[in-house]
Length: 53
Image (cartoon, rainbow, N blue to C red; front, side, top):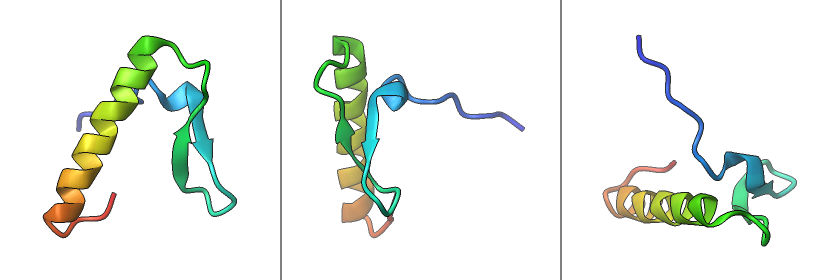
């Protein structure tokens, strides 16, 4: 079984009180920002297909 690596933005993730990802820290490095933007695109596409991440 293959394990999934944590996303580059994970160390900069911000969560609300319900443990939902709501953003990343403002001082996150560019590679983390780009990783988070890719995640948002993937999430939007999944939601359009009826999936929830």
